[in-house]
Image (cartoon, rainbow, N blue to C red; front, side, top):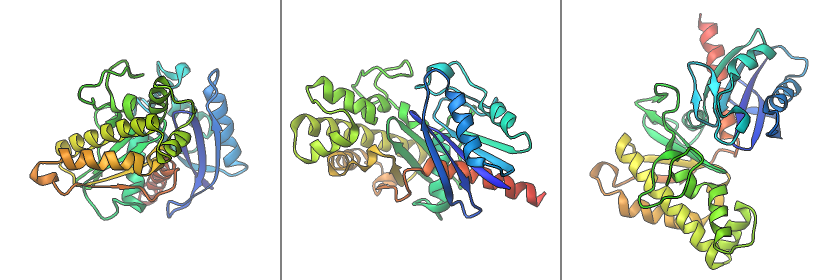
Length: 301
C-alpha cells in the first residue's frame, strides 16, 4: 500500500509517494494541459501509484478552492475556473483511498510546521512566492482553514497605491505585483528583454537598472503584505519559499527594508522573516502531511 501527495500548481502538477516521516519520493511532474488538465493529472497519479494499492491521497491546490465541496478553481486553469470536482475525480481513480484536500497555502504551512521553520511554534505565517503568491496561517497550533478553505490567501492582500490588474478580477493584489510571472511582465513592459524570473533575478544581481527596479517593486510589495498580515494575525515569524523567493538580495533587500519600515507595532517590532529551507516541493510535502495524518487518524479508530 502507498500514500500519495498531489500538488496542483499554477503551471504544473506534481505527484509523489509519501512515507510516514513525511518524506516524499518517486516524484513526477507534468505541465498543465490547457485543453484537458484532468487527463494529465490522472495519468500522473496512475504512473506514480504503479501496481500499488493506494491507501490515501493528499491534495494541495492553487486557489481559490471550495474544500467542503471538494472543488478547485485555480485562476490559471481556464477549463477549471468555474469549478472542478477534484476530490470526486481522485476517488474515481482510487476508489478505496481516503482523500484529503486543502489549498496549497495550508499545505505549505503544514509542511513548515511539521518539518520546517515553524516546527515547535504555535503561531506563524508561511508564504510561497513563485509564479504567483500564496500563503497559509498557523494560529494557536492549528492551520486556519476558513469558511471555504481559502484562509491565508495572502496573494490577494492589496498593495497600497497600486492598480495592477489581477487575474482574480481585482486590482493591486500582491500576487499581481510581486508574483514571478507578474514581475517579469512588468519588467518587459519597461523594456527588459529576458523571459523568466530566474533571468530577471540574475539581471538584477548584475545591476541591470530595469531588473533592479522590478525586483525592488516586488520585494517592497511583499514586505508590506507580510507586515499587514503579521499585524492582523499577531505573529512574529514568517517563512517564505518558492522559486521566485530564491532570487537573493535584489528581492530580499527591499523586502527587509519594507518590513523594517512598517513593522512598527510593539507586538511585531521583532518580526522575523526568513527564506524557507524546505525544497521547492514544500506544498507537496504538506499534501503528504494531510494524507499521512488521515491514515494515522484511521488507525487510531
